[in-house]
Image (cartoon, rainbow, N blue to C red; front, side):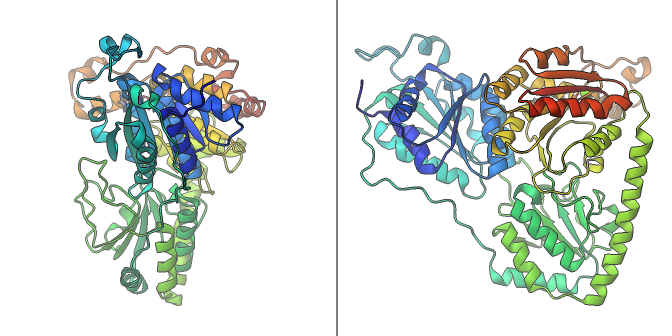
Length: 562
Ligand SMILES: Cc1ncc(C[n+]2csc(CCOP(=O)(O)OP(=O)(O)O)c2C)c(N)n1
Ligand SMILES: [Mg+2]
């Protein structure tokens, strides 16, 4: 048995130093040195990361992303060469857009059989090499990408990539590592360190004072948020601030997380229009595009943006229209603001009463719409939400990968707890992978992916179901099956309302002749059921949940109206 360490051990040990719990991978032969190091970890009973192999690279990246979203802890992803990197690029882009830290590493060969006594395999020269190296494949979708070119720099290069990924704005970093580097001898550091977490950066006291003065005098303040719920701490700090000052909270349509309790009187839905003209202070809490079109500035509001990294390098265009930025730790900024501003008791009480009345009217409308939706066939998506509200545990984690039904979900899924909603970001095809990562991070919680029939087919669905089975990550997938890409038809019609397609009823890019989703679940020993009768929906959801409780993944295929 070999007793000398190489680059494989350098990677695994760097993971130990960074506190990485999982290495997510879709395999390639260059990773034999890492497999050796993982075998050595078992053999010598050392502590360290677990290696999870899955059947598709998007899935590997998305499980890592979901786990980090659930726990706040960064993970490492190993992909195969340029090919695996390209397959994983969708997930890497999603993580970049969502600000999720991770270290992605892919391998390649440098010697193509020319090195005496070492043959990396003939596949590299013909099929797998990328001219100019792999880093430029991901240039636009990572924070930092480089080559770790020697076994002597590999360990520290990975640690640095991990530290970079976790600094604000957080996001994926990438390293290209050759087979030859991986197989070169490596000597572990004499005095290894545990890498510290990224420090908290605080908003300057004078900026807190400035915004506190605005809040103290504002007559019509409004809070707008899209992503406050990314951390439980920020969610809670926002609730405390809004309660103290009776601030109306508007969520951006298509908000990224559960940001505020939906049954709280301060919660005022997703429409800013009723507040637009009078609003004299807008506290914008992590919103990438506060107004739309972006330059459409509110007429009277002083606009303060609370976000650790408001200027988003993952976006091609942004126009924040702010009067001030508060870029320290968000939860602490919100707590400091609540402590620094003064409460005008009478004004705050008057506002609270107004908000309560408006909130109650909104809830009454919501409940009436849900009751009215119950009888409709095909099933009304509003009723799907009502059924989920009735059947699922209150802290269920939902992942949203629906398209035309997003607004309905946001309005009708009633969530009153943090970390109960996550949204797929970037392109379609990632919801199922994220759900597995979330389940891995929160095994005690029920996890449900809400997904369009079209979106489902963009996912590496078989790999997701296989990983759910193999790694005991049973989640439920509820398909909003309208047998089409409704978004395509809707947009075509909007662009050409009097066009030829509308005239003759021919829509390209719309129809889906889907496989049997029930059989797909069954193919991995999971539970599948199709539901067309609205009265049978709640029972079907319960059966899906029971299947999850017995360790099986479940697909509930709901026939909905468009
Ligand atoms: C990777 C990727 N390819 C294509 C698209 C374009 N696209 C956006 S929505 C959509 C249709 C989604 O269909 P479905 O999930 O059934 O939702 P519906 O439109 O029916 O509500 C498509 C193809 C995309 N966003 N991402
Ligand atoms: Mg559809």
